[in-house]
Amino acid sequence: MTVWIRHRDFYHLDTHPEASQGHSSVSPEPSRGPSGQTQYWRWWRRAASYPLVLFIRVWRKLISPLYGNVCSFYPSCSAYGLESVTVHGLFRGSALTAWRILRCNPFTGGGVDHVPPSDRAWPEEELPAIVRLNHPPIPRDED
Amino acid sequence: MAFLDTIMWPFSWAVSFILSMWHSLLSLMGLPEGSGWNWAISILLLVLVIRIILIPLFVRQIKSQRGMQIIQPEIQKLQAKYKGKKDPVSRQAMAQEQQALFKKHKVNPFMTCLPILAQMPIFLALFWCLNRIGGSGQIGTGDTDYQSEGYFALSGEEVTSFANSRIFGVGMPDTFLGATQGDPALMGSTVTVIALTSVMIILMVGTQFFTQKQLMQKNMSEAALKGQFAQTQKIMLYALPLVFVFGGVYFPVGVLIYWTATNFWTMGQQWWVIRNNPTPGSMAEKELNLRRAAKGLPPVGEEARKAREEAAKPKSEHKGHTAQPKKKKKKKKKKKGQR
Image (cartoon, rainbow over all chains, first blue to last red; front, side):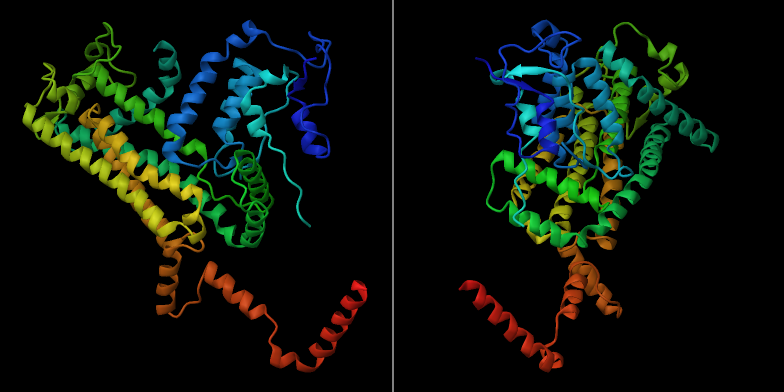
């Protein structure tokens, strides 16, 4: 049986740290379409975002290191961009990214700013690595 | 290319508009219209305009760094929590907690992305402008004749004047690469083009290197100098000049003027910031406190924090009688608990 992971699951984690990461929706197939809570995008639905995803990956590998750690947000603008385009698709993803870059100035003060949760789900082995990277489990404080 | 052109449209327009304005003004003030110096000074003034617009951002940036020393104890606590955890997941978790902490105390030591990203298309706009209006590059120009149709806010006459202007006999659109490949569009002689572009590439790379080195030597705290981050910075210190040496051979003289001027501005701005608002715990802060001590002023930053902590510590000789019985009580309680 395939283990399905929803993008939303990573957000329950932020408010309820005791929930185990990502495994809350174990079902053979998520319901698809507008009525369902989760949806799976097949390759044709994902395809539109591929060029931009590739561009951001190359940017993160080659150009980001040139000026080091400058972003005043978590996740950094490029990590946010990669996650939002992978998860929300080309149009909503690029709009979210553009808005984030505009907000990344000294007047906003930065802070933790995650990509808005989406209704998408993936079989565990297909989950994009950036989603896991941007939502690390926070260990409890000692006191 | 067409897609990029659409995105670049506002930047190309702004850059050509500012250049056109300064060129007209300088011509009014008596500089010959077709002179390369007129265009060179216009480019310098373009840099000035852009960097002046960015000043409020840097001032705000410095202000949001000021609170850093107040939250130093909490940052140390966080560092202790993640001590020895070097896997990517822990590093991400620590970064997230740190940002939450900065937000809570309304401080942020980071540069922010917008001012850096905003400067890239401006540079690209000038690069495209010089490459297209004349000279060796002519990337993707096709059959547009900019010298009669104009380029964004630059009129046809201005484009012709810009494309044919020279300094030291070298044309504004000339490149190092064009000179070594014997480009027929080259305006200066091979030797003078190579000489001038080489000097400018060295200046551009030199200022870049010096600025970065200054930042690392003087304005990083001792803790930051030991970390993983410092290692990456060290690699970048030497890798970045290489990138610009190889990139520089493609840059037209006009772009080299722009980039060198920008670097000089950054160098000056950073010198001022390091001198007056150094990072807590850095060498620049020690120097600042030495200068302050010479003037009879109290120290700032890390040393001031240490001094405050020292003052807050209880002094044993004053508390003699009251302190003694309390300590005994505590010890007794502990023993009871152990049984």
